[in-house]
Image (tube, rainbow over all chains, first blue to last red; front, side, top):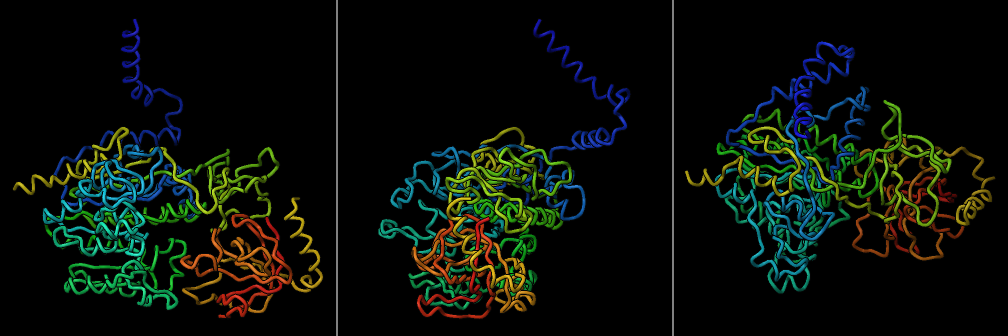
Length: 494
Length: 141
């Protein structure tokens, strides 16, 4: 009987669309019409099973699903259109989607290091480590032996493809570092960060590993922040005369890179970046800030000038496309995460919008039919969209008044700087919550830094084999889809 | 009203007659710089004027002190305790004529004071500042 009922229900479901189109009284309703238009697009979409020539992996650090929603609304409101029905570029350009389970080998809630390893090397690993497998002991150099992975970037280099990494964070930070580095401690960004044990056992810092990377002919493109990790402590920073480099091992890594690549150019500001002509150079190394690059909201105030993430992405593609075999490129929107940690929704959202612009620019610069483009996050954040604000309410504004008689904002955090210590929350009646510097309120006081969250994040994709992203997947499946799409083993065999 | 808020408000009231002579001009951190350390024309024009800024109090150097660092975003370290701390460019040294009543570094405060621009080295601490607020009053929001 149960089987019979289910069968009837299925038949009814199959019949509903046709019935609805002809008979339901809401058939002319604008939302109904929009729904049918979206249905038609879904029906029309066909899998692309060609071998991918290129792969672009956008990693938006900390891009929780509420961050996507709130960014969509803010982008619309900033453009003077309806925010709720607005679409970020990647929502439409990357139509195949899945959810990603981000837990790591040792943690319910991940940090950015093993999650990046999962995406570019295909294994879950241990929080605080990069480019190593589950057998690693955190911060123990000696445990790296036998636990180091080979990344998709190294495979691509060996197969003769071009490779590039772009990040708005330090290029030695966890996400971009996972493409080339193997460290038991993610903080080993320059030689002064190494522990005694790491030095004694011959472990190398992340910046040095980038310059010494043995894969193929090395990265064709490196754009990001973190200049201080490549400069000596007695070298004055070109952008701020009060600052110097960090290294104390005598290695001027920028000088080494320049000496090694006479077909490339090193740049540190907007002017140098703009002067890069892909017709004349084969590779570029750009370090645009001593530490992380600016948030998009602050970029125009940078002393030396910094390119946007969209500008870096397009320039990277132009350089990488010089290789007829194809390329693999990671683009990290690294500071969405930092803004969330600071409890500052405005910068998290505006940096997300900047990534959306980069995705649009990237798709315009490649052949989408031969380029697998994936956008995902490494982990979530404890960021929420709450209350019952009316449609069109400022996404940075007040959602309502709580039981304590004080206004509360639509956006908020479970923990972080926005919480008071053992005291009632602040009264926002005379606070401009739409100010870019406003920190959303939080429940649990955690000093300077809000935390990551353990909920699943989105994977969005288009291009060859993008349709394999459906359902709920373990994060490391991203690597396996990329590997499958590129068919690097087949290329090597041929 | 808690003890801290009361103390800060009381201090503000004590200094009110002098401050009331001029209307404080709101000045946002976002409106300080054009690029690098180049001040916006609006910020530069406020040199010597009474302004009101909103931000956070970085943890002071010691319990009894007559100044603090006003930050755009919460900073959990004091400017002298951490030599490796990378201080953002947009900080303001705020001088009080009274001992500073410490406010937790994550609590938003509103500070009124006379705005000063240009590099200056504090004789007592050696702290180099580019922007300062003098004769401040402040309260927690």
